[in-house]
Amino acid sequence: MSNVLIDRLLTEFNYPEISLDNHDEFVHQQGLVVLFFPGDAETVKDATDVAVILPELVDAFDQRFNPGVVTDTFGAGMTLKRQYGFTHYPSLVFVRDGEYVGTISRIQDWSDYLSKIQSFFTAPVRRAPGFSIPVVAG
Image (cartoon, rainbow, N blue to C red; front, side):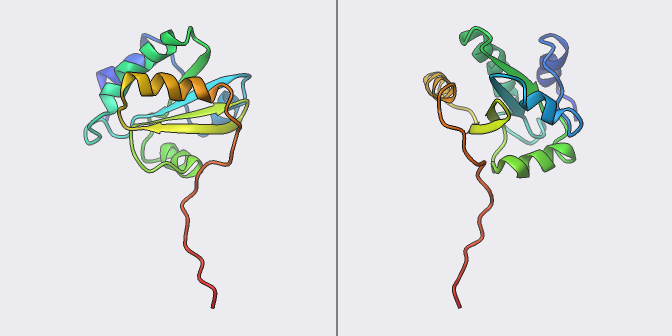
């Protein structure tokens, strides 16, 4: 279901809508990008809050990272959610030069956003967290 605050990111701010078709091209651009996974705005409490905060974060960092929005929560969004291994909506997934850097999930304090995002510019890339299944030796 569409939401005016999430739609505003696409229409007013011209953030690209990310799907499986354009995901790889988007994340492989040079520098830091963020994928915004709002989830279903009807059921995810903080989705619209993060939709309002995201443009403010982009401005706070002088457009040093590019945002995209994953609006298809149950199709492509679910596939990409599994790829990046986060468990809670809304989430901001940061990728630098095509490699996973980190995720910020749920609503955070402004200062936490600023410090975490600042660290993502220089943090080492790593494998996205996966869903782990305990291995028992037999």
